[in-house]
Length: 314
Image 1 (cartoon, rainbow, N blue to C red):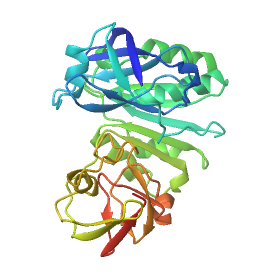
Image 2 (image 1 turned 180 degrees about the vertical axis):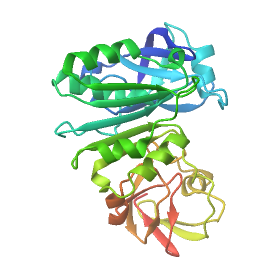
Image 3 (image 1 turned 135 degrees about the vertical axis):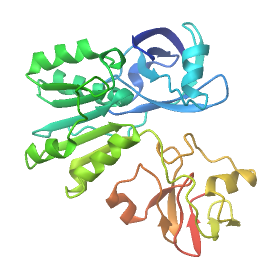
């Protein structure tokens, strides 16, 4: 769908907020805390950005950090887009949903990883529910939405801790201590850069998966090798061989097919495809452990086959 950029404004050093007004009525879109949209950028790239909106409204709002190692996405947003531009966006999707019924919700965000979590604490604050948030960033200047978060925390008696570990004498957040001090039924949410995610995964490794919720920026498994296997496309009647160094998505595109896709890294869920026969080697960061075990679907941009042959609903 097409949207008009109503406004672009800085919200911290190196971070801008875009307010996008869809040409279709945005109130008809399903927007829930943790959702994201695709932006089809003018340089041809497609990038996923979390919505900071907790629900549908007049605009869809995202915040974008200028990555110093940008492959062209964030740089294009910061340097090329301006208010009044029209841009193609996707409908919202949510692979990082909020459990609104939890007795204790603990959020850990790193840098721009605050964006989906901001939507979540906005929603809990609307419900009058307390929450706990640890937001890690290098400096106060690089920490977006500080003032709003303080207001929300004061309104509902929430616990808000900003950890500026780039400042002298400030140690990184001890995530293990946070987890150990939580209630036995606490729900944990984390979004941020790889080191933070790795520490969070280690600290929550022994918890039931249903209590641990994560959203990743990127997937290290994308380039992982795998063996050659046969792919059977049930609906199209096509059978092809997937080489060890090629993804299912790439092989299909080489044969002239155009499956729905976006991130090509197994983090957005756009290319999820039903498995009809065979067993998948899941390498995405979207499916839960239970969903992987069910072997019902796979992300064809990164996941492969454990069995010699795989039949998909394609």
